Length: 289
Image (cartoon, rainbow, N blue to C red; front, side, top):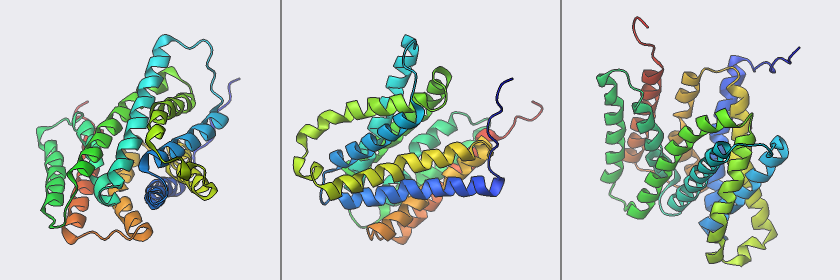
């Protein structure tokens, strides 16, 4: 007799877990940005990935023998997207406000969602997101174009990460694929340490802070979301995740005192609303189906 999967949390608890995960990711980003004064972004992202990989490996204890070539290729692609996504967004954080960076990054998943639109009028959500991004350029303060480019790269990698996660789930059970992909991401990012001042990596305070960033940005949210998804449908989960840009702006304001202008908050609202609309549009059943 096979074991039944553990019951999911109640609906309010599941929603709370997703919100905790969102806040954990973005406040982790805020604390990571504070570390940039002691350690370059490449070193901070490496600490984050190493911490999450170590915890996931201990948690999953993935079975590696007997895996097909396809399984390894899928995990490698997943890990490459994970590594590039984290590296690029940290590079962006070092140049532009966290809330602005995450708002731009969110365009990647939003465009991916647009592929699933069933009606041409649903493309209006993409238009609203584009308005939000254009609003960011209207602010009189200088928005570093390199930081914007890194955020766009992170968004593209995020879309690839979403696509790869589905393929990885088919080839690896549970979180085994994520654990292996996390190791791939660490290997991919590690050569960048050659250009990092080693002093920060030998400072116990920095190492402890970096480990905390890894827990906040990866382990806590993944655990919370995994539990919440036992109860919440994918559409509801997607709508809640659309709050990421607003949470990022809040974390930036509270942790690193980043102040956004009214037009930038307007841009964030546009992207959040567009993301919610896109999620609902892609989950809407076809009439007569």
